[in-house]
Length: 128
Length: 225
Image (cartoon, rainbow over all chains, first blue to last red; front, side):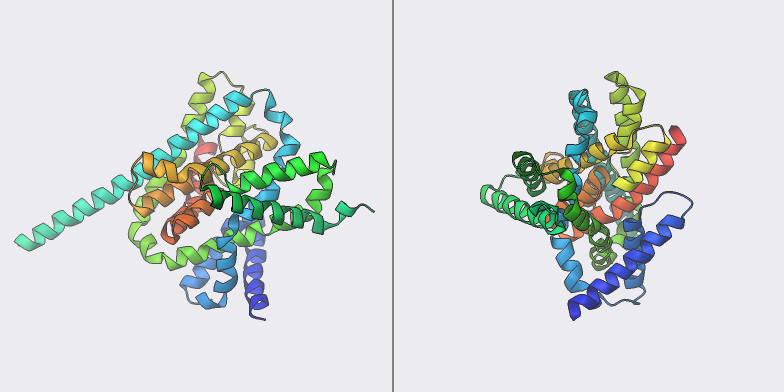
């Protein structure tokens, strides 16, 4: 019974989240709206962690499998890229690595600056 | 009535090929032997060898795809468990995803122009680092082709999930927040599956980055193109 209860809660949130996404004036996917919705409900303690954790942990641990059928759809569209395959692949590989590098390094930099700033403040407070 | 026209066929084929993928991945401990990639190759080979129509696979495949929404939604639980990290580093996360989205869009535009790729293909590639529904919407609104975008998003995601550990090592990214934001910004939910494996804190940060980089990419793409 517990599993059904947990699935019901998660599915219900997805149903509402997908509906909200359909009436938004801009494009934002239902899955991400549902994620934000569920976070707010957890954060406000409206839903307790243990009310969904068994099913949620199962889904989290096995998330990759849900991408498999969508990937098979490539087979249907392969002809769309076959003529420009190398350029297509090159752009994707380079820009993916570049995006990882830039975003992770900017996070590191911000964290470094914040820590340095905090250290300075602490020092100031200590000397005062 | 064909044996394979039942939805159970698509579901079982996905399960079995994925299990084989995980087993091969565990045995050889090579990140390039990604379970999704192995399952994908096995399914396509199976359908081709036994001349089974793709539509038959889809009957069951669509049911598994339907589970993508709840599977993405429950990333909220990881984020909730890591809320301290989120509250402590939200500025870094916003800056990282913002600059990351800009880096993704501009690098694709510049590379595409340099390689003399046509405008429609460039428009289809531009939103490739964000999650599929957002990417498709951006692509069609700036004159791209949805089918091309789906392929690009998928390849990006698989790349991210395969090479994330290597990239972390190569660029010496130490902080879990930086690692997570990097993975989420460059390879959306598919990359996040790998981030969750690397650690709950990294997975949670990667999950948050899907939402932020999605928003930033919408704004930047519509602003510039």
